[in-house]
Amino acid sequence: MKKYLAAMAVLLILLLGFQRVDTYAQRPDYEKYGRIATAVIKEDFLGEAVQDYQYMGRKQIDDRQVLDSFQYKVSVNGKPVIMTVQVTHDLKSDRLLSLTVTEQHQQ
Image 1 (cartoon, helix red, strand yellow):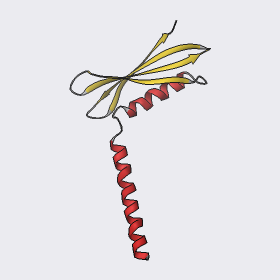
Image 2 (tube, rainbow, N blue to C red; image 1 turned 180 degrees about the vertical axis):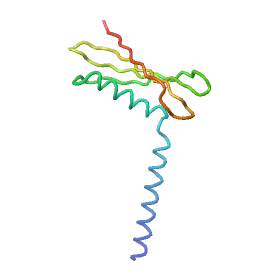
Image 3 (cartoon, rainbow, N blue to C red; image 1 turned 60 degrees about the vertical axis):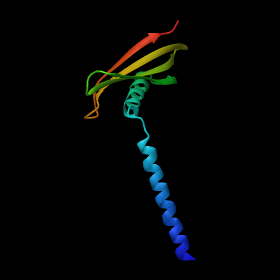
């Protein structure tokens, strides 16, 4: 009986381990840069709530570089402000090359 329980425990651990690997493999490749963009917005707007976040897409610059765009809706003094963060990074080295933040006030 103990051998049966031990075998079931080992099988359960193996199954849970494979599930974690599979979950990690499905993460989008822009996730790292989305976290960086979010940190920049939160730092720029301390005390203000980020109301909405959206990944706007990717543009291929050349064979190595891409531009990922993220859009945030922030309320500043009760007025909505749209912030766009554009992150240029190298696909081969996975390094950040530039980060640009632009602001658009909503009417």
